Image 1 (cartoon, rainbow, N blue to C red):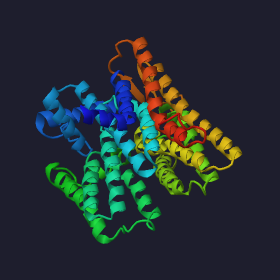
Image 2: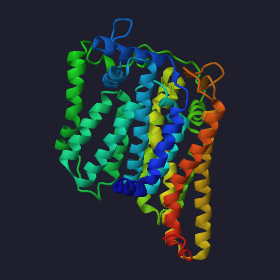
Image 3: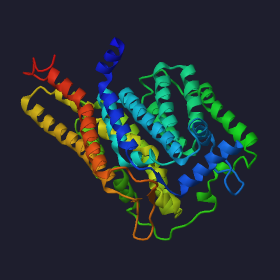
Image 4: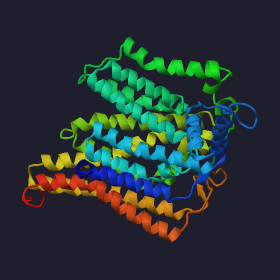
Length: 444
């Protein structure tokens, strides 16, 4: 009991955020679309036949690990779409926690808490936690790989490199989009090469790549009994549906619909604050470059596929193609907390402190506005959730079951939002009150 109290006393903010995220998602309806039904069919094939077969008699053109994970859950809880959704909810909650760990490793604990709060509440992530898709499974393993990779770089340890390689192999065997998580890893290795003894030599590369090569060869070259390279050429590319005149604003339309305007404004404001006060915030600039570079590359690939190749699926399914960019957008916006704390503590002149406090207050207001915007969005949509890009082409999620009581859920959601906001900001306020002049006695 004493140990539990001690753990809660130290970690109550992230415990509160995880509880809030769980309450938000578990009280939602659960959703479906064509992709979800196809993936549920593949998981059912694993459960009944041992392989991810579809009704066509062929295996699904996706890596298999996510479907085997679901089959294990079906074996324990029973074969049903809802049980598969609860697996997605569990991985989604795990991703919220891993983003807290990642943010704490990179920027600091305040950023980790704020990023977890934003990510756990944002509709983009909430909906993908209530539909049977393998996306949040690959994101969970991808974030775990990135954490282990950062530790490998900091400790210059070949054992950690191998561990990161094993976890990445699991992510890559869940969904090929996991390859996007290599972008921030390479940026961290390159941008911080002077501070660390880690070098990306041949031995490190082989240790990292070997688990992926083995797992891919064993499955696609052996068990799958299909064209080994077939899975690497998705039907989105081999049998493409083309769109003649894609709307140039397709990205901001879907991004704002699924993530919210204030999350982007918070990210831009955080980036601007780092540039304006670059001397005082020098240690954050390269981390901002990692986040911005990762978001930029992922978005750039999607823009090329749509505007360059005129592919329809990356056009209407932006929220799947760019899902791995969302954690880094949350990290960039959330870093306002640690940046603000450093700025407030480092200002000597009263006038400068007032200006900085005003700027930090504006930034925090954007983060709170993002939480409010997310809560309003989650309570507004009933039935079909649209991520439309124009008046003709729509893509979204269909409700599979209604929430029990919308009025009760709405009250609960706003209560959860207050809880999450408090957990997000309390450590920041405690730090400021402890170190701000004339605040002695306010905080022990």
